[in-house]
Length: 225
Length: 225
Image 1 (spheres, each protein chain N blue to C red):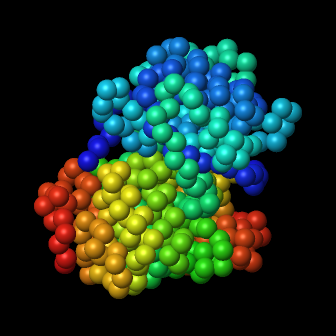
Image 2 (cartoon, rainbow over the protein chains, first blue to last red; image 1 turned 180 degrees about the vertical axis):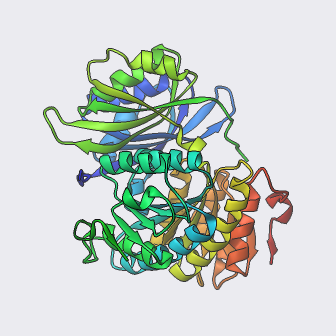
């Protein structure tokens, strides 16, 4: 399973004139300085003359000072604020998708367990969305592959299968494991672990990604609790 | 308060050779085609010869076909998969930060309420992190300004003040409102709304951002429930 390497990342928030040419100019300057952009995200837009966008930018291979120096003097950069890379603040993400009643109970277990690990220096977030319907849930499962720092998905519901099971196989193929509640439908044949109690499912999800826990999902693969 | 405009966004996931020059090349090509990058995020890295990165890319002002055509033939692009913009799947984000016990109860209220609105076509996520300590919580409050699609923060705890209150003022200044539980410390003087019951705080947080609810945080500003 691919594991993100741990590399120092410098982070800034830019006020940038919002025109097509401004982002290539920033990207080119950073590359010339030897940095690699890891995240570039337009978080807000401000109307004005000219309109500007606030851009969250994380760069690997440059110190904070080198990053600020690289951006200095670029025509479209109006302000640079040092920030902290989101991975340092919000850390690894457990994603919980499914029916509201079950998602809330999985979140209860996961947040309680993350609290214990975060107290010991971990950083684990528990991110959730309640959704209904095969199409919407399958789209969310596929989109977990596009979420930065997503490490594990919990499928919390009472019946899932069809295209959700296809999407689950796709997600596991890119290296993101899945825990499902015990439920009706084919999904329980397409996940790494099946857990009947939602609070325990959330707890195990956090244990599976925490460095501070002794729980190896590899050794539990295919089991049901 | 700045509101994100709603503009069509095309999304792809790229397999890109992981070297500094590859991202400026992608950014330049997209700008030449008239697109504006809104998100560029390295979600996974794959060792290999050469090493590659999976890049989640969202672009405004281009159709999916035009985006794929723009990337076609770029030297470092090894594969392009159409995806869905994360905003369409996970929507607006409520962020809940604080002590595990309270965060879990706020999440319970927020997930239950988001379930009801998502059934009617909304897309609201509830994203949480349990944290302890003024320094860590203040850092998380500041970092909410850098999270894509974050629309409201709930501070869930029993005592918060000092630098957390400073960070709260900074976050509200960029246009992200805050609901706090009723608690010890100065924080309750630096938020938009104070709610004693955590389940209700989570419910109100979702109502405040849902288009499908009739709840106007502006009209509740400064109140305590």
